Image (cartoon, rainbow, N blue to C red; front, side, top):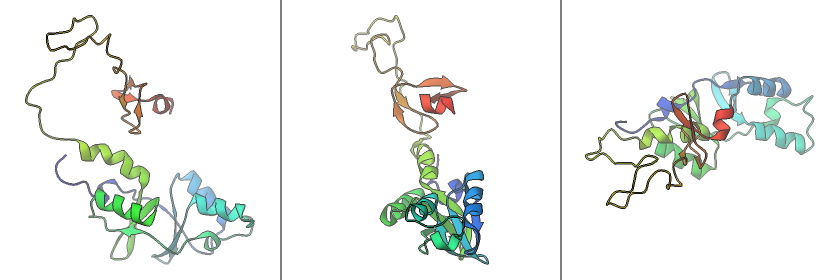
Length: 191
C-alpha cells in the first residue's frame, strides 16, 4: 500500500442521528437494528452530543426510566472529532488521549461519518502491507521432506504450521483454517 491510510478511506459514512428530544427506546432500537455506534445527537445539522450503548446501560443501571427517557437524558456533550484527511496514526493517538471508542469525522463542522476502534483495528493490516518484493524466496519444508543442511525442519516436526493472525479479526491464534481464500480463526469461521 502506498502512502498513509487516511480516516476518509476507512470511516463509516452511515451513522444514527437523533434529536435531544427523541425517545430513548426507539433510538436505541434503531441503533441496534442498524448495527451502528454511536448515536450522534444533532440540533439541525450541528452535532451537539453523542450517546453510546454504554451510556444507555449506565442510565438504566443508575435507576433511570427508559420508558420516559429521551436521548438528551443520556447524551455526552463532549464529542471527539477528527478531519477526514488525517492519518490513522493520528486517529489512534486522538482516541488514546481522549479514551474514546470512536471519533466523529467532520469537515467544516459538518458530520461526515464515524471512525470506531474496530475500523482502525480492521485496517491495521492495510498499513502494514508492503509493495516490496522479497529478493530471495524463502524455502519451506513440506510434510515428509527431510531437513536440509541449513537445519530446516520438516513441516511435520514444525509445531507452528496452523498458527498466525486471522484475516478477519487480526487475532493471533493457534487454530487457523483456510475458508474462502482467507485464514480464519474458529470464531470468524462460525460467523
